[in-house]
Image 1 (tube, rainbow over the protein chains, first blue to last red):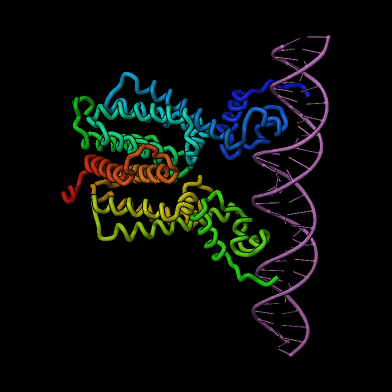
Image 2 (image 1 turned 90 degrees about the horizontal axis):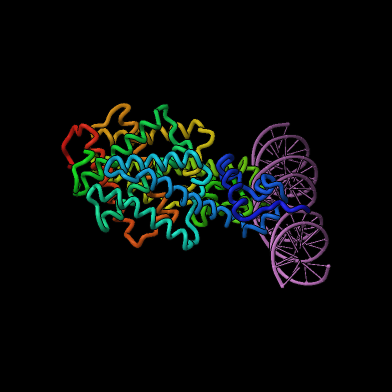
Length: 195
Length: 195
DNA sequence: TTGACAAAACTAATACTATTAGTCAAAATA
DNA sequence: TATTTTGACTAATAGTATTAGTTTTGTCAA
């Protein structure tokens, strides 16, 4: 029984790879153990359960998504910021369909880290919304609007829900145009930049 | 071995009830067999597989959703139609979370009926969009915009993704306001009614 | 009314799933 | 070097979907 040198991080790395390559549904204990050259029960030395592992994927996904979203939105405002943020999310989901699927799972425990990341993400969107003149409670409602629109679009795209022979890239731009127009009309528009 | 008098429809009815009450994930062959007072293998006289059963739930959900959406939108146009259509969908999803979850599954085969229902659903949204002056390919992109926004919102709501202590009903109205404004600005607005 | 046949329920078995308990060796520590 | 902790193992359990083969029930025809 030579040791494989596993730890929780390496297991999570492998889980993310399997989920992204073969789908979250293909992530089984047996599949993951095979990937790591080990027998299934050995994984329980590093992970509490498959549910806990999926939860780890969810948190990793949110962390990475927050990172790329921050980078994308940095130094932009108004329509530019919205565009950059939205594309960062869509691009991330397409590059990491397994992790994104894990983020779509019904929320479970709400750990400390999850709340922290969720809060940071909300703040990022709030910053974009400030450029449209949305503040306070009104802005929080619009955070949900943006989250819903982006989540729904990406979820439909990844799930093959767009059946018509019509360019999805163009549809995404139309979505962003619609959101931009709606946000502009609903807010006070402190600065006139970007339409 | 007295006969239970099952057929494909009764099995699908029971499956829908279990899925709506206990969640789509709770719908197992054993659970469904117990619900119908029968042993698990007996179900295979009426259903090809669990996957096929879930597919049946998906189709039933789309059929019912199309019905309530049609009724809701009938006789309305513009903002009224958008409002009615959106609320019909949200209400249906909350009344039938199991069936709605089945509709969120990645699309599989695309049967004849699925294409027919999908087409009818697209036509229904197109009719609403005509009130905003959207036609042709532009309208088809906006169908995706509406689908995405509604799907994302309902998915987040049902999945517990809205964590903030903030009224979800109000957020939904804000979403509709935003979409209405965006659709109005983007289209040619053939009739001035409803703002 | 009986005889034949088809449909539906069953039992038994297979191959998967996650998971736990208990064992032994390897690595880390005293 | 001795001890303790850690990690991988084997074996086993209980769940999952599913198939094969058997028996019984209901239907339809003679």
